[in-house]
Amino acid sequence: MRHLLLGMMLLCTFAASAGMDPQLLKQTIGQRLGVQVFLVDETPVPGLYLLGTAQGLLYSDARGNYVLQGSMLDLAHDMQNLTRLSQQQQRRLALAQVGEARLWLKAPNERYRVTLFTDLGCRRCHAVLDDLPQLQARGVSVQLLPLAAPFAELAETQALWCDPALLGELSLSDRLPAAGCNEILAHHIGLSQWLGIKASPSWVLPNGDLVRGYQSPEQLLKILDHINAPANPSSSAS
Image (cartoon, rainbow, N blue to C red):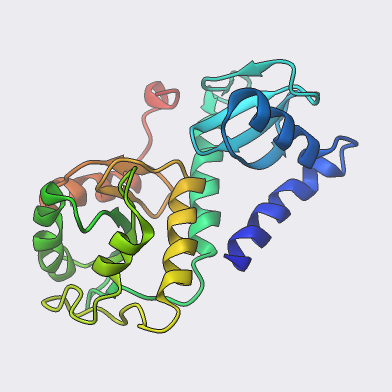
């Protein structure tokens, strides 16, 4: 959790240098909207700030009196979707806070690395776990991270993720340790909350894009291959 908080503090530094108080803005928005604000950052629009919340990205003035929700497009640069770019950057930064690499299913001939957020108590998620060896054989390394059900107790999540027999069929690089497992789980669940990930399963791709729901190995590989394909200018705002 310490590394996660450090990452969020760093994101607030730039906004603080602009003469506004990011902590005060976080508190104001949190009280008025009832959502937890994880970060505050500047935007290209003077006086408008980006807010990262568990409900997604918002935009606000410095005092938190006016809030916008939606996509910011840069019409001067081929209609770049700045909101999407910010979301991608946040996901990449958040995953960099994971620390010690655990629960990696590494592909011998690795082409891609993806992160899978899943709830082990979710029945429909079992098909995804069954597909992981196929992805591994096709060059996709997968890191598993916990996603807790909305009303699940930490003890219930711990019983699933901290079991020494967890996913025994998979050749994971390392499993969660019996000692300190609760702290690691709390850190990872906080990570999913920071990113606003609620659907199980959810995939975070190498470029930071989020793909929700079940994807067959063929579907996921098609998406991954498309990341490196030439962009279609007409779809840049989608």
